[in-house]
Length: 308
Picture 1 (cartoon, rainbow, N blue to C red):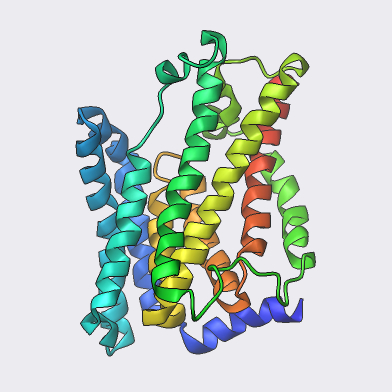
Picture 2: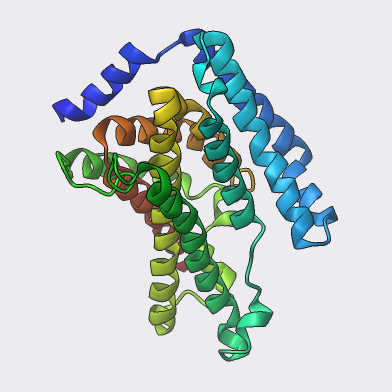
């Protein structure tokens, strides 16, 4: 536990700038307000007709918060030697393009009907999309690691060195009653359980279907931790050190803009905490435990509400 809290002390000593953090938080708050007031992301997506248009939209959509965060970092944190290094722009372009490509790529239920009965097509489409997300976020990060960082570091956060399970399971224990309490909110039950998108009743007769979905759903969260807290935070460390945590957390918030508002807002602060833990701890396993555990808690809470 001493090391766990030490990560936050180290970050505060090395990187904490109240003006920068306050300005970035204000930017996130305004962005959230505009998106949820006008349903911005969803409305724009409905107007797009092709996968290429969706990709271009997300390229701009994710580049905007990243660029603003980097600009604010330069303004508040002083010298920006990293801006004169071509590798920073290559890495930034790869990270944002990877996010845009994943967000604009989807397997529809119609395609799944070629392999399974129509009743199970939505379920298998959901599972396939989660598996595809894991692959699309793992491969570019892995290839970048092979090309650039393989000789200097292990694969972004996949290490158990000096890793302790205790603080992360303690966090989950503390979060469990809060998740079940807030699971009664209307916007929460509108979004969860995600299993409901499979159009199958959530009863015991469909336990194998539920387990298949939740396993694939969980794998997607593993890929999220690897991409954001492993690849993005740790690869950016070459140029920004721990300063890369805030820009990554802002972009992480933007990928939640179609989730309930409370979840999207908390994702920024959660991203900061998990980014600090992964950067100073050198491991993404703690983030995987917290993130995956929270996701399954939310599913369990929503299913419990449905079956009461």
